[in-house]
Length: 185
Image (cartoon, rainbow, N blue to C red; front, side, top):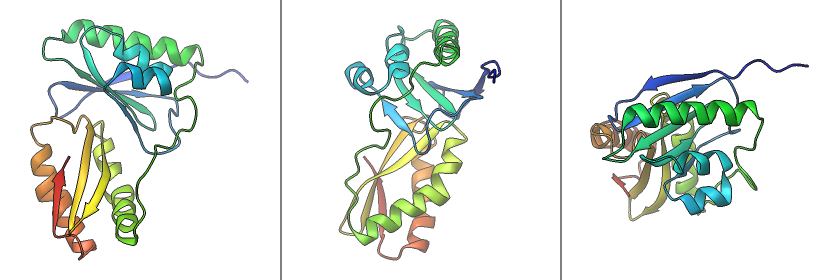
């Protein structure tokens, strides 16, 4: 059966240094994979490694059916956009691997509260932030504080602090009374 052509469409995000590329392919089964170092990408994702090799790109996040690109302060959007879009399309058209090895990220979640927080994030938060090309993951839970990592377009976004405190923290505290505060790592 012949597979349809690869389509890559550009979407702007709330973060002025980040663009989201939606694709008509499943890249990951679930979650997201975030890369800010070329060596990490080379070890786990051929696509992310190619993208991080483009001059002007400082971060790549792979989602279920999208790629978020973050540019450097000196990066030129015209060059970054054209090169990233072409790279994604060629990589997917060639059927090359997106992630190598185990797709699931290593997790340190072990307590019942951490499992509850992670389930809340997976069900209530991550789908919404993925729409803007971002992701939120639990780093750890200590002494009533949930430490969250903002990734993709959420990382460095001017509105991420408000989203974290006014949105995520408020809802998380309502759903899980043990959470008294949320902080970004």
